[in-house]
Length: 79
Image 1: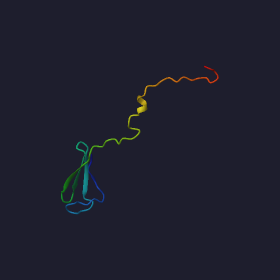
Image 2: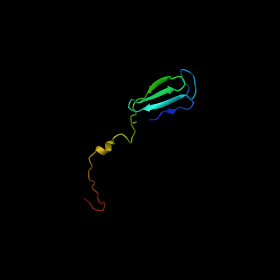
Image 3: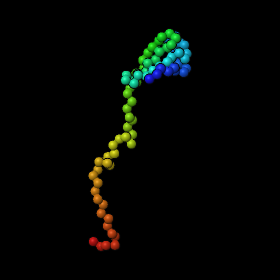
Image 4: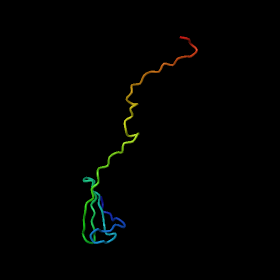
């Protein structure tokens, strides 16, 4: 991915504002940052994103119940 400047970011080493550019490394789940003024670099690691369990993403237990036919009874017929 292309390197992009981070608006308003301040370099932790030299204190220069708007001199930090960042690049995302998807293979390592990391963001590489560097200051164009003093050459400071660091790496911020992210955890891989996982899907949040919701009622939609979890398997529905009703889908696992075997279907049974329904017998419709006529109330006018005496059994």
